[in-house]
Length: 232
Image (cartoon, rainbow, N blue to C red):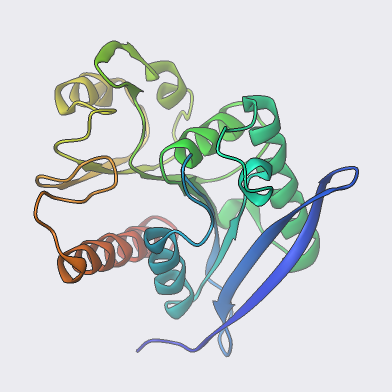
């Protein structure tokens, strides 16, 4: 049974005089199962349709979902912030959640779409956010056309933490053979879900809005099931 969920929007100061938007959704009537912080991709923001659907599905199933804008998107700019500022923003959102919503790191998963997924992995590997699991909605394992230059060590650095991958089979930023070469080197539980024919945004050639919505729903439902299994 789906639960009713609440939505709150906060303005959080990341640097002196610079605030960003944080959106929180969680169950209204039952105890929260855990927390998920999701970050957006480089060319979108916290209201990207996929992030929205995943966050709502989490809230409907007892999880508190937290989304936020990196500062460059909050300011309406196209060029991404330096990685240090991206990581600082993510860590500030985490600290805010600990203070205001009693977030327990033992029941925290972090992740996001593309740039957000990579930044989530960086803050965990760097000790800025002590998450217990990671969710990658299209992990950018390498630059387009350069699969030899990968982010292997970043994934390996997650240690025993469970990692959930969603990848399109036509994603130019994550060739499947390249990903498959990394997976045996990961020491924690790994789940990989492929979107057949999907690009970096999980869209397939010829997809209409109905098909795109169905893909989002499948990703959201799979995320909920996986979290319920690894953080019961």
